[in-house]
Length: 498
Image (cartoon, rainbow, N blue to C red; front, side, top):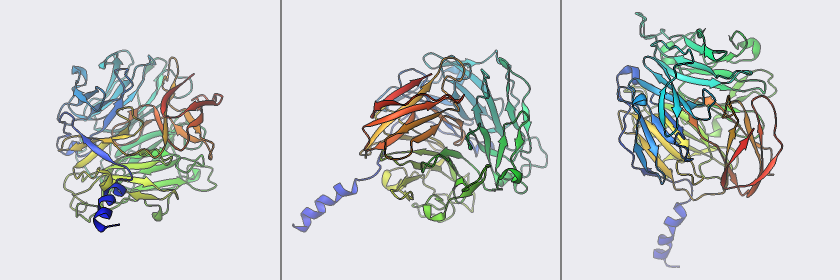
């Protein structure tokens, strides 16, 4: 074969692997002073009823923005007046009142808002829930349903206490837990001490109930603090060494949980300044005892892989998802300097860590087209156009929001699954979806509200399934009831009804 012909064939080989292309969207920038160095989340959820997720992005000192998804990766700025708020740090979608329509918990520097969703993406503040917010600096949120309550339990994480004259260092604010009292909320419970959280997640770590994991920013608690997990007893308490809880201290930014290896135990990914922490349950542990996975697994993503800046990276939003449908979950991390932190990289690209067949992870952000050098903050890893491939959204500080369409050649089949009940907790939060493709243990996915950094997604759970063309699916509902296995073809969206 002549050399010239060989050179013509090489580009075709190089196209293997994940590929993303930028999508034009209306300009939107997360802006503001030091109170908006953190935050900048985005909520992904379907408020129009067409099966495609809209995007609600925090703006800081700019008004927050709702982008209507018109299909075909076309997005239109269509923010209702009630959502055009300033001071917004992030937002999380959930169905608070059980009417089957998604609402929003909006986090702010100032009064937090619970916004009731109505048809065609209209919103208004709830007026009948008894929810009262003060004007703290809120940077984290999670929610779950406890027992037979018709309303969710809400956790708000508050950053630095701006009224402390000795701050900002060692001046972390308290966190607040709102538990329903019948059909209304009463006075919130103070969760103290607070260590400046930037992410929270209610998750069932041990097969018994959802407890509250909190990732905290060492930059402001400086000393005496650590990562936290609150046991959701009648009176919440912190897990400690007597429970098996291990002390971990990091510049915590984001949380994500996923059973990566099919052993029934969820791994936890936490972003930070410097190395990112993927943790797993300690073998044989009966309590919440977690340890860092080995460095050789390839998940630390501690320095930029392009851009020429060798200083440590700063990770923010983190999400798990199978971006090529090969049957193995990958990891996306939005990256960016806090502002001008001299000891951290200023040219800090997003990470796309692709899981290999042996369980290790390899960086693919540059080749995939996701290596933006803007100051990334909140993000979403969701299927925006319904083609079965996960797309990427990143909100940037002092730079326009970015959206990328996944144009990878799919390496396998996929399935999206949504839980749906009538009445309270309509999305089945706290439940599990199990998908069995016959090749090993069922894939398990917990339905949660929270995690990431300052924003979350309420979309059907996406499963990459590799070669499987038919699978069995079942639901484990929040009250423990387990449905019978049902068989379905792949490459479609299904709903499991209670």
